[in-house]
Image (cartoon, rainbow, N blue to C red):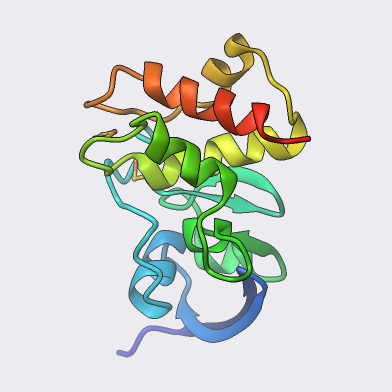
Length: 159
Ligand code: FES
Ligand code: FES
C-alpha cells in the first residue's frame, strides 16, 4: 500500500516551497533530500548535537526532531539563507573564517544558525550569553573558544 502524502507549504530562505510529503518525513530530510539544501547537516538524529539546526520563524530548532508537516505555514532559514543577498558571506560567516571558528566544519551550519539567532535577538551579547546560545551545539574539534571569538567579532562589527 502506498504511503499517504500530505500537502505542505513552507517558506524556505524567502522562497515558498510546496510539496506532498509523508507524515513522518523529518524536516531535515525534506531540506536535504527534497530541496537539496545540504548545508544543514545530520549528526545524531535525536536532538543532541545541533548539527541540523535551522531557524523556524527566527528561532533555532532541531530539524531532525520536527516533521515537515509541522513546518507547513512557517518560515525556515537554513545556513544557505544566512549569506548576503549578493551571495557573499555574512559578517558572522566572515568572522568564523577569520577566527578559525571551524576545523572539520561539520558543526558549523548549526553553530552559525544558533549564533545568528542570538545576534538577531541581541546584537551585543556577553561571552556568557554566547556560550549559552551555542550550548546545545556540539563541536568535537575546536574547543569552542574560536567559535565564541567569532561571534564576538561579528557583534563588534555590528553597529
Ligand atoms: S542531527 Fe539533529 S540534533 Fe543531532
Ligand atoms: S569544527 Fe569539527 S565538529 Fe566543529
